[in-house]
Image (cartoon, rainbow, N blue to C red):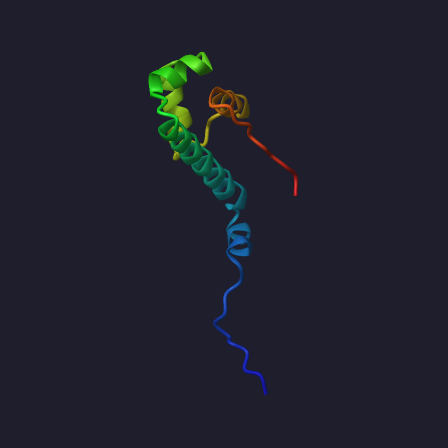
Length: 95
């Protein structure tokens, strides 16, 4: 007889959906990953924030918003400009 664990939880995605926060949490996680990747490439290529802002044709203040992993309110256009400034692209897909 196979014993079924009654305390086994559902996947995290299911719980987030039940709580009504799946999209919000997912968006924040994506933004955190992109911010981390941008900072990593900037460090690897020795690009200063001042130089990065110049490449993006924006201010240091705006760049700080882009690089802040806790700020999900950055537009896709801005993220694309940041990626282009370091020779990269943002790739999105519907799943």
